[in-house]
Image (cartoon, rainbow, N blue to C red; front, side, top):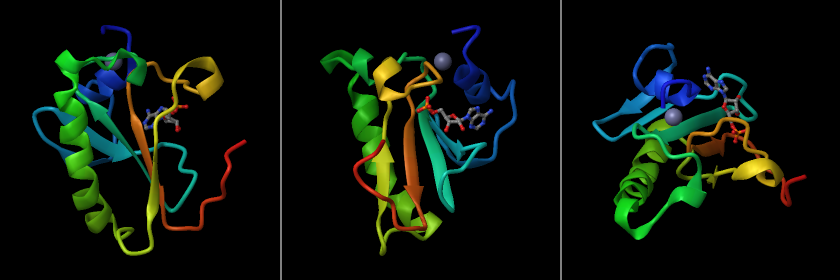
Length: 114
Ligand code: AMP
Ligand code: ZN
């Protein structure tokens, strides 16, 4: 999508602090971290949110979730644990309309969320 912030980050039109990249996904540091470790994992292909996931495009989900344990190890949060979140729509608190998974760790995270 032409006017999408995370498409621009995926295309390197806007710089980001990349922690992992392959042909399908990009993981980069959140610009406003809520925890010592806070990265965002995005598919390079635009999808508005997890509400756009269908059987036909769901292979990106297994790709992302197979990557998470490896990223957790690289980021040093695999032993103590961490959280993976995707916000969807207005009530979900989604501010950037390109599917992304927050990966948060490095401190004790409270639950439930606000
Ligand atoms: P959400 O509110 O779930 O849509 O999350 C969007 C996230 O994107 C927020 O945590 C922001 O801090 C983060 N963010 C916004 N702009 C950038 C950027 N240019 N680089 C990295 N992270 C960003
Ligand atoms: Zn996009």
